Length: 122
Image (cartoon, rainbow, N blue to C red; front, side, top):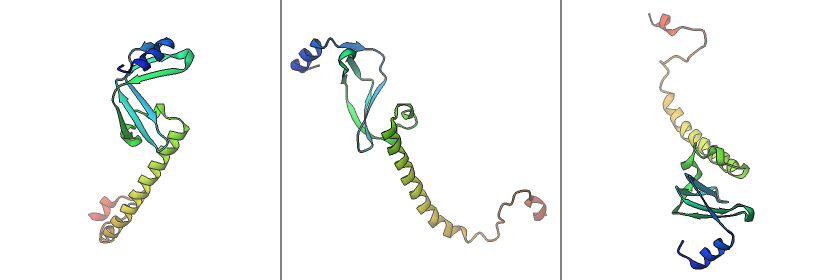
């Protein structure tokens, strides 16, 4: 901590270090996440005050999946759902272009349950 005023304020709150914090993620309203890897964390639980020290990186929620899923609240889950839906719609749009290429495959039979195409080839 470099800031003397901050140190004084935290000392008045009697903050204590919390050990073994692997990561801290702060979810922003735009769906992105401020991610701190191996930060130093101090807390004054009775005052509901936490101080996090380290280099925070702005990341998209998708960069942190699946490890972040257990940390998501309802708002973040909604953001993830929107991302998944937009990804699926992009895949469908790309799939529509690929479907035109599949029209050339008239000599390849469609798979039908219960039929064995091996016998028909012989």
